Length: 188
Image (tube, rainbow, N blue to C red; front, side):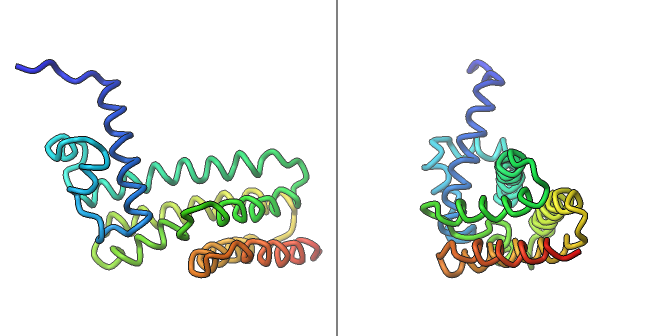
């Protein structure tokens, strides 16, 4: 009988699997990437993959959950370095511009996956909504600190910039949205 796999090895294998899934799903889409391709990229046998995740849908949701923690954590780390509340809100768009300019940027993973699976997967829709709600709440905290009641426009400008940059392949929407937010933050 084979020796049980140590918890640390399970953690490493799970991370390798999520890394492979995220890379391929984000680059090409969920439906275009089969589980055999995820298996090959992760180096794990299918049997082991299905011990971690009973279905491809479960893998997608776990990948989105992990990406959410990392994505919003990176955003917060950038924004919270700024002391002035108004500049902090503008820093959201500076971070977005850096993200948009990264090689391989393909827009919002949650919007992309929602477009592919939103009509057929309640679990994916729930995860997409959870991410968007958490992003909204994160923005709301920073905007409320300015004392200017513009949470919804700032959130919509951020979301619009993300979608537009994903479609156009140009980071300029972050700069345009930042300028609009700067104007909004000047209102009493």
